[in-house]
Length: 220
Image (cartoon, rainbow, N blue to C red; front, side, top):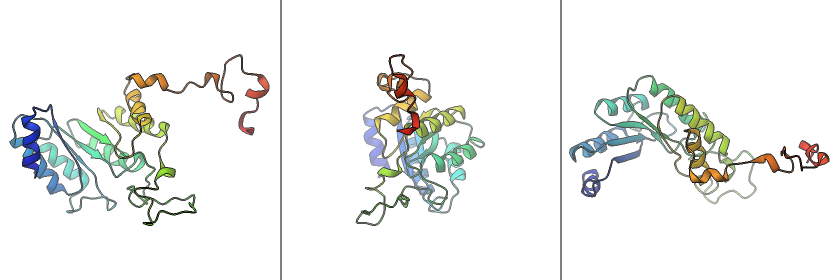
């Protein structure tokens, strides 16, 4: 399967090939081998460990990343399944042992140590109309969305660790991608829509905002 897909990409003269969302280490190794066999095409390989906090074939996440790098992957890292809170610890641990470029693309959901992936996140606000399949994933995750500040902080932290391949995976909205870009010091066209609260009736600083409105503050 990998040989066939990689051959199509190679025929199209792609700049690089991404193999992602691997939760079996051996499958990730096979994908890398297929890319390398196709010629001089850079390979990006990212893992997506399940809630067991290890690969399904019992490899540790960090060991898998290290082996991928040692076998010649140009970029290694994590994508999907985990939100910022439960992906960042792996990035910090991996940065200590990896020498080359790293990639990171979390999902924009509030995963936590007890629920490390978005597959079993519960809605603690107690929605009165639960999804018919009994889980928030994949169609009732809305209340568990990360806001722009959470994604921006994650991207800024990753950038400070020297990670340059940054993005957001399943569930990403344009606002999240813009925040990542700005955290990297870039100003994409969408930055024209970045917040400007100077004229906001409650938070604004513009002199034309009546004092009695500005003073209302958190009483609203």
